[in-house]
Image (cartoon, rainbow, N blue to C red; front, side, top):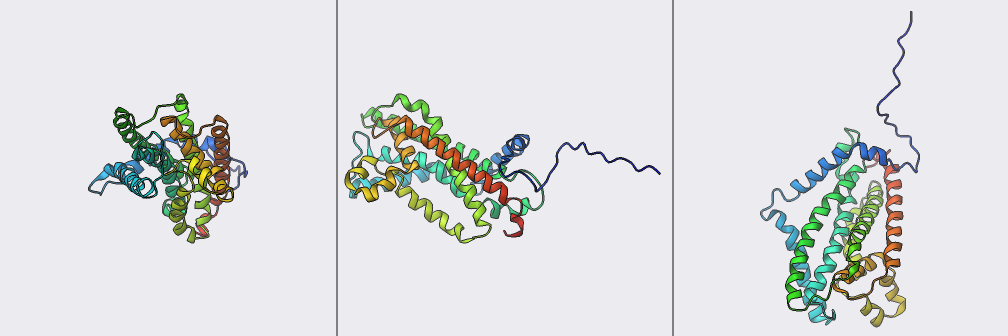
Length: 289
């Protein structure tokens, strides 16, 4: 009796065995509809049961800018050149928040989504990618608020001048997104074994903010601190990104296209390393999470 031949022409083949350098970009593209579904979920449900709702997108950077202005510019007397201190701080916080939100939200991907990961297959990297994309909406709202305040202070000649390098703003945003996503995937992979990292992430982000020139010009660090300490800020890629963004909108501080391109290279490298570690961890994370 003849046995029926098995059909081996599968449309998709799911396997735990894959090349370490297989970044699965083709598979991510195939699941792009799911990516957009998760993006919509993140946007709609984040503040769904809160009283103020999306207004929290505005309240957080504004309150933080006020506090930084009182403490660093009022008490510590840090000068911000021809730019209003509040606007100076708002610029740094706006670009920093995109990185911080991406890092914080993606650093706990495996633990937060262990239930859905254990039931259905899809490229796990879709989840941190959706967080990075959805945070672009929040960033866009905060940029809108920054533009409104910029117009107000420009009327009183307290906003500096816009640099022609502003056309590189998408590159700056891309760098922050890649850094937040790459570092977040690395930390998320480590959290599956070392739960303590969950509690250290928030503290680490706050500490990193203070060495990333968010609330002060880099020139002050180089001028007032010894070289043995100032190099931490001077060679911090995040500090360079924040300083570059402020130069674009105020023409105050330092800007170098070489630094922007080198930081882009660093962010791409970190993203690819994070993707490799993330893809390796997803094969057996369910046994340890």
